[in-house]
Image 1 (cartoon, rainbow, N blue to C red):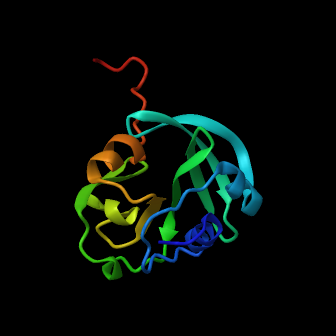
Image 2: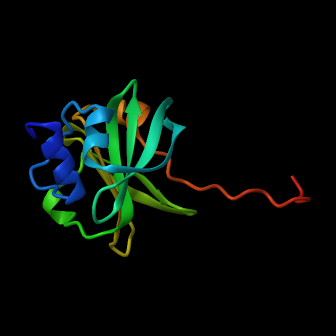
Length: 160
């Protein structure tokens, strides 16, 4: 496992997934000491629970840090990312990946015991990477899974 929070955050910023074994204990204060916050924190649903999400400048890209009671529970980076997904091996689970209004069946590769989830589209680009502490698949889906689906607003006057 990465020895310190600082080391783990540096690896996240570099998208260094080789040998990733989960996010160590990190406080929001440690994140704020390393990365510049952008925008106000928001209370959003993460899994079935609420967490505070805030954007941070990771140096070469933006990421979102999710915390509960001042402890970082997940960091996600969403963009067209250059990540070697094949090097990660076979995931423990495949969930539906969402990117905007698009949904990709089996597109989210989940490695819960390694603290990693990667969203890919059928054409290959990596859509997002989520980093969290090693856990079980049930704990990931119930408490850490980011709902990335955008849902269209019904048209005014549309028939029900």
